[in-house]
Length: 214
Image 1 (cartoon, rainbow, N blue to C red):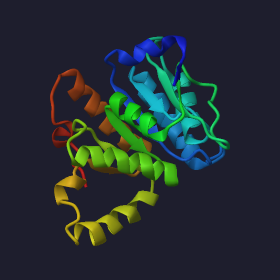
Image 2: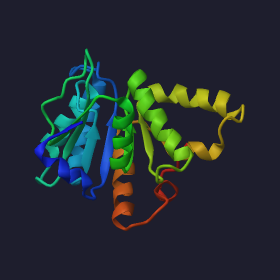
Image 3: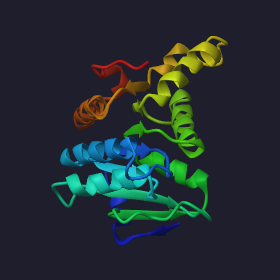
Image 4: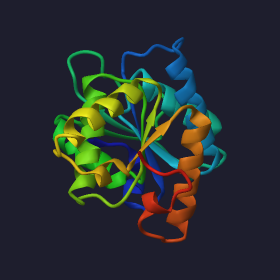
């Protein structure tokens, strides 16, 4: 694992939003634009973001955050993974860490994140989403929201309810940390309210949100 000069900032207490999504999405894709705009809103609230630090959705998030921030004390963080293809660090990072193992990288995401946004993506995005959800289910991670952004998650949630839930492989309470957001404004309202609860030191964030989980 390697560090940039500002990596010691990661040990400081900041409210941070992790943004997961496909590395294969290009800059002319609607999802890229949406995440770019969402990250600008997050930065304007002086909230850090954490991404995988690479291309696609990660680039959109880090670039939007850089363009939207109003103070130098608001950080665009990238947790880059060494891969033979696809994954190269984007150019919009204040803080970068390099990883050789997905497991260590995932644990660092969880250590840093106070809310998670899951944009459209493939296997890697599903891994990040499932790992976050698993830790919440078994209470290895404090109560944080997982915001599923975009239409692709609607059918996934239907499948979860129709199969694992109906088969009692999980409990209905396990869905309460998941929040479907139809657009970035809905996602941002959840993030903004979570930030306020965080600043007030109020535990049990998901149960106190105006919008209820699935």
